[in-house]
Image (tube, rainbow over the protein chains, first blue to last red):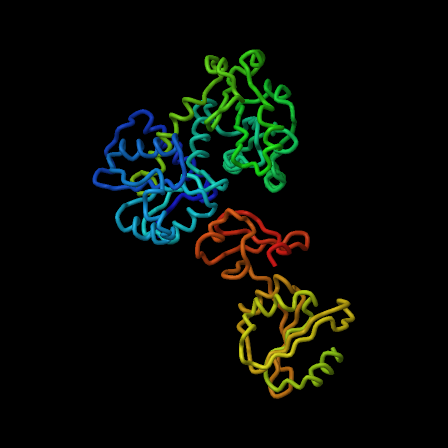
Length: 301
Length: 152
């Protein structure tokens, strides 16, 4: 059967390390025509900037061609075509499908219908594994290792899929976590249970200042308005954390700030010029990691 | 065990299957899980019968119908302590206990409103998780956990 990437837990620790190693090779030499003659579909049923552009760039830099759409409204989906029919048809044209869809589980379903590998580029609030792998790559590149790091996750830990997947992926590497969030957006119990069963230490706080100085990675996230059903609840927490350069005086010299982007106001622009800001480079890393994912799943790396 | 024999004689099932010790409130759900609505076989249903072990129980007797183990085990989700008696020629020829299935397909709906299975014609698939005597279902597609009580 084809190998697809739907959830970060589809990859073993060895596979994760292999992807990171391959990404490093692509960072050194970002144009490699190893997939010449291949055609890859990027089908996005939901808006995206970074993910779509970096996936399409990755395909182009590997020498393959891209087909697809970034808006389902001018396709047969608007005529009521089922996802099954769309995937069946597209998978007959191409060598791989990269898809984003607002419904959770849609990518897993697509991978069961498709005759070619499927890469999940985000299925609603569920999984976004290429983001997790590029987060791991960024941690590896800035710290020189993945083992034994202290990671402080900040913001919306309840709905934020990136923090959940990163937590699962980092659990292979003996981390220690700090969860910084307002009370209403705390890390869900099932993830804390998961850590407890694996014997991984964590602590929780509502104060951003409390653990700035004793972490290696500060993983900031946006409070996502689109996940709230009650607008009053969103208003209460939307500006709860704001990281400014003046707060970073006593941080560890190796500390790096990551953010999956887009940011709203949780990181002040004056942080961008500090040596701790890494989020733009992190977004760039997405290109190399996605090149690695595509070439690995197609059996070329 | 004597009491079971007595009941079986009362309804005088010649050949068929008796499902006993179903929680009284789950009898209708059991009929749905086994797809018994609308079939032609003779079915006797008892609800709120006295049970020494469970207080009130339900019982379903289906004439001339025998089930595969896989079909019956799906009942474990809503009636983990149910017993199955296979009747042939008025005699109990076999008694079975249910085994909780590891995975279920095509029954139960995911409770996540944004799950693909609630929007497109996708056959549902769950992993059964038993923890602290509570049963929950992990959706194969959206990876969310649903409490069995909310699904049924």
